[in-house]
Length: 255
Image (tube, rainbow, N blue to C red; front, side, top):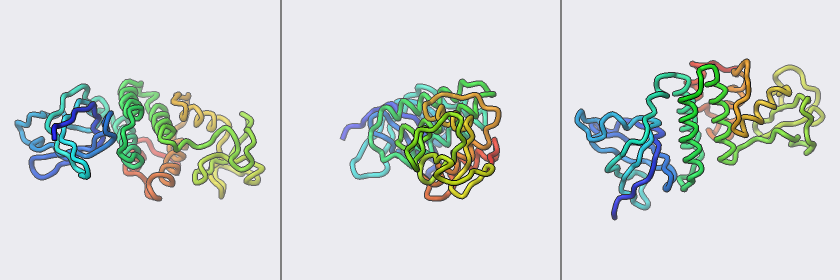
């Protein structure tokens, strides 16, 4: 069988034996898959030092049906992800996007998903330090929206009533949307048995996140906590994602 060649982004890389690496790739034509890069850890490897997370290139590999691991034969560099690695917050957000893709995707081809991830990594690398957390929250929620996990924010999931912009609501992460005060009873403070209270400005920010637009934020901790709870319930079977644990040490959150 001849090798296939496709544009790819490295989502994860880890050593395999003393000389090789296993790469988790998101590809344009073949979804996400695993390849082994034999000899990649040798000092004189033909790959040099480019097979690191968030590097983008044209991967050539033998694709064998029915197998979980394929053999990489070449990787032509398009763009490195080294700029992300120079900042812990940027790196943590990029790792979060990668973990979301690896946990939710089924390996089916999705060129739009590929383009979204590649564009998100580029934007994260270029955004100013003051906006990087807001940009990260935007990329995380926008990716979830693309994957079909977008929560409802514009109407109450209890009574289907369209919500007024000035309403404080409850974000029910398990049900995947917001509930009005009439559907959950009086809202008292930031916590509620049905979920977390969202004042108007927080719900407006969440709506912008889902559209891929970066809102102006004074504080980000509560937004990270909201995203963390949603991801933990919907894609990681009740366990907090490793990338979120790392981000919590860098940016903090409000669990």
